[in-house]
Amino acid sequence: EVQLVESGGGLVKPGGSLRLSCAASGFTFSSYSMNWVRQAPGKGLEWVSSISSSSSYIYYADSVKGRFTISRDNAKNSLYLQMNSLRAEDTAVYYCAREGRAQGGPFDPWGQGTLVTVSS
Amino acid sequence: SYVLTQPPSVSVAPGQTARITCGGNNIGSKSVHWYQQKPGQAPVLVVYDDSDRPSGIPERFSGSNSGNTATLTISRVEAGDEADYYCQVWDSSSDRWVFGGGTKLTVL
Image 1 (cartoon, rainbow over the protein chains, first blue to last red):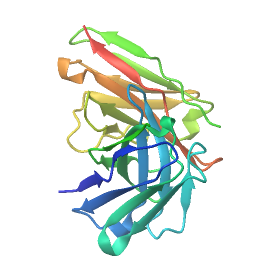
Image 2 (image 1 turned 90 degrees about the vertical axis):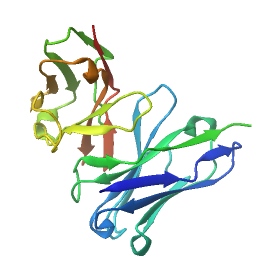
Image 3 (image 1 turned 120 degrees about the horizontal axis):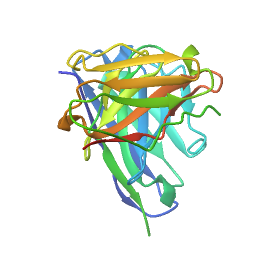
């Protein structure tokens, strides 16, 4: 069974840092691009960042560029999101999602999400 | 930046057909993906590449894309289809994924 499991969320103060992880299983992780998508409470989906299978291509939403860093470890079947200089508006459920093909493919599946709360 | 526009809400009676639109500049030239999200759950892919269905998604879900509008059509709507629906495209001009604002489908 293809599965993605996020971890690392929690409560952090403004200006603080947090590292999210996404553990993949049931497929050849090193063959797929991966993404982070977030959803603020009561709001819609917002794409955060993408990383290609070999980490050659990395993209960020303007809202997180310069503060967040996406990375992956294909040997550990894991995806990461290092979040620095966190702001209240970064409060959201963060999902990891597999991208169906090299570029432009659908996100399937998604993990269950991990909640990040930025508050003093 | 590329913008996708969805109606905030659509209401339909059980057994009828729901149509959820996603507007964007020349969206017909892009591949559109659609997701269903029920409360407290992660999104689920229901249509990809404009009109293809993943395995396990009922044939009642279909999609089309032309000009400036993509449409997700749900035939013979059931109570269990009540959810938020999001469209998505890859904007190659900015190397960004874009989601529509989402549409809440209410089954009357």
